[in-house]
Length: 71
Image 1: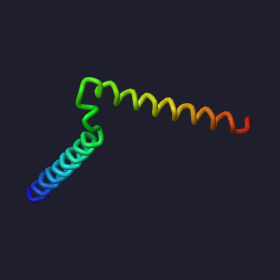
Image 2 (image 1 turned 30 degrees about the vertical axis):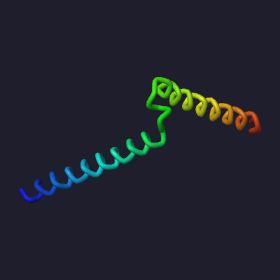
Image 3 (image 1 turned 135 degrees about the vertical axis):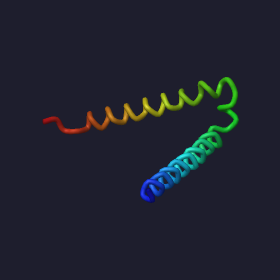
Image 4 (image 1 turned 60 degrees about the vertical axis):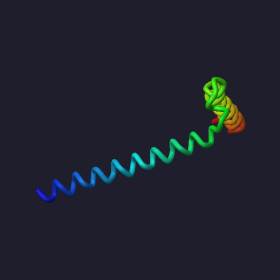
């Protein structure tokens, strides 16, 4: 019985910590997005930035692959 109570309390503590961390991370994302993301243009600006980042990473990967010696 006592083991079950401790398990439930431990689970609740873990859930509380995860919710707290999620809230902090969400607040950090909102603060870094700034006022540009709050308008209608901001909804498009954030995905565009991700698209550019992915494109840049793919180009870097292709350059690295091109510079590797072939077998």
